[in-house]
Image (tube, rainbow, N blue to C red):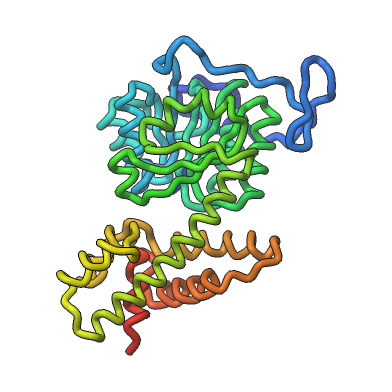
Length: 340
């Protein structure tokens, strides 16, 4: 979820409510004066975050959904969290009160942050937040985006922020709500490796693994590969368990037998029992899976590939959403595989 910040009418301190400034167009800095050419534009070298210790960092987080809220708590536990924001203001106010931090009401409320973490839903949400943050963050700040978006969106964000000498790391995650709650997410990051190293104290607070995959966009490219595998596994598990039901096999015996062998996987372990009980409380929503798969489909098309598993999953999740299950967990897929 994203906070849609109002536009500012003048300079403001971070702790006071203000409107955000009108968005400026991207500016190409001329060569010279220590500039460097990166991602199609000249940029001055980015100032570095304070090296004296991680507790000197001030961190803000935007997006307090099922993933973002646990992340905020882990960042707070490290003594780093300064401000939180969310599209629904009441949710930001509640989290701020719980953690004794600032509840942001505009992008200006993040102006004193060294790092801002995004965990929102859609490409448009990411771009809107980045455009607002670009106007208020100080040079040398870093924006980390944990949303799942298109590779091109990540590159656009880096360009917008780079024009203001603000760094960007695209860092989608895998591990589901359980991974966020347990601080065991896998983070796939794209961007400058030195910048990633600087913000590792933030990411490490909620991640079991952080992998630098390459330049800007490489994190999102890796997430696309991840979602191909996830979609295929979901299809196979749902079809296999639907078959097991038709054959009259006892779930209490079937599931541990499957999990003890080559068929074991995260989805079977975390969702097998609940999906056979028709319990589909969302960990990862069908609507979000459909959004991710559309991103994957576009990437595959650009690569000249037609991925049959992705095409089948797209059709299945679109059908689930048509049946009103967009907010249900992706394990609701078994309801389609059972047939009539």
